[in-house]
Image 1 (cartoon, one colour):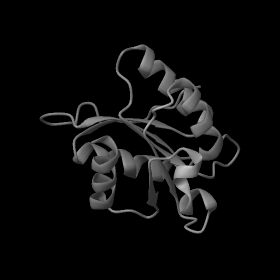
Image 2 (image 1 turned 30 degrees about the vertical axis):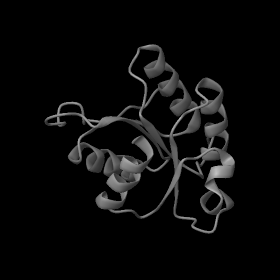
Image 3 (image 1 turned 90 degrees about the horizontal axis):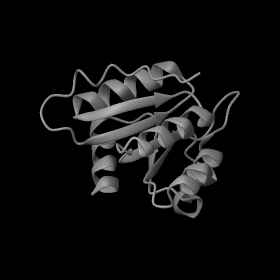
Image 4 (image 1 turned 45 degrees about the horizontal axis):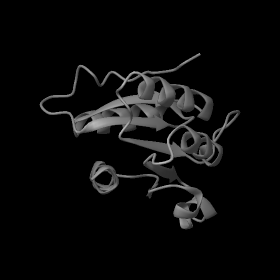
Length: 140
């Protein structure tokens, strides 16, 4: 079942900066990321695991409203994590702009993110400014 808890669409004021997908297995983190992204002008979809993220990515791409970037948590309890998810997203769209995010700063995915197909890294916890700066660099 698809979990898209974002309330963002009605909150984006002015010009939308882009369409972002956030995948994290922890609901409080999904909610916080959603709130921060809305505040800085992004439309947001959220997923609790890789399977949901891939399905949402495919749906938005096929509808003509592709995601401008995705933020993927590395470790997903009971589901597909960031390492497997980026592989599947690259099959759908080789040029996907993906940001790896984790509290495990010493993970090989965080230290050598480009080798795994990620465009940037966003260590947790992150501020709204760090989130905005990372997205601006990845999207532009």
